[in-house]
Length: 324
Image (cartoon, rainbow, N blue to C red; front, side, top):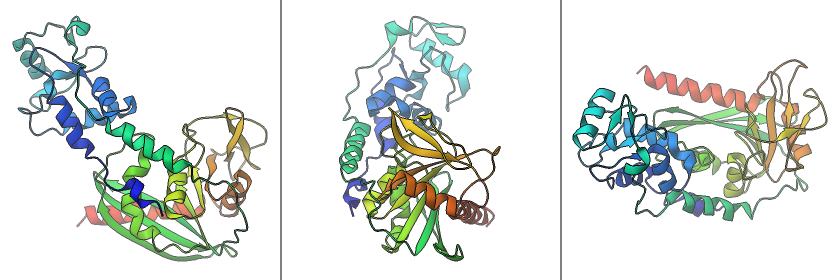
């Protein structure tokens, strides 16, 4: 295992609040600038979420965070109109609902350790262990894994099937807290900690099918790949949306090739000719062709049975807890 790669994760909530606390009176910053100071612009939406949950508006002046176009946006301390009044009181000129001359008052001089850059380096270091060789794998079982959320409360489910007969075997759900937020392309750092206890019980003769991408990913290392490398098991990624790549030869019934920079990274496959496909890619210890064959073997409806039932079980656990 390479579990050390997902241990000691930064507290991204605290890191975000500490950055915003640096914005001085008479200046503003943007959600994008805070995200870049975390290490990746893709965290902009998370920054907005963090500001909406800010409960210390004195230390963390979220009123000084606006949109890239200058629009003031919301404010937990009293709404947009209150935000405008406070900014004007600090000497910020507002025209309508936007900061005038944003470039003149924009604060970008953050002191930061760029925590997301650190995580990206860990991710790329793990990628060196990725193998797309199926070898002599003769799986006895296939396990679908999915996670449902109620805010930061997580419900991780795994459901096993006999590989030869397709018969459903046992399933298990564990509850936990996802301490790392959702940030696009960093999903593994959110989910691996909450599925670890489930994955430690997976046998070496089991293929894990994960609700997410394998190498059909901008970094060729999506969550299905990272899970496979961390736990040393063969994995297949099955995603509902196409994250990247272009279509090549084939058909959705047999498997429509998806290529990235000319390289085969996965397939779009559907049970019926006109139905919406899912996007299959090898995670770890799988070739693209083997990943497709495994998926088609369990394709009863649009979503393959292992991840479809794992999703249902996880969501059911979430709903039952909510109703208590």
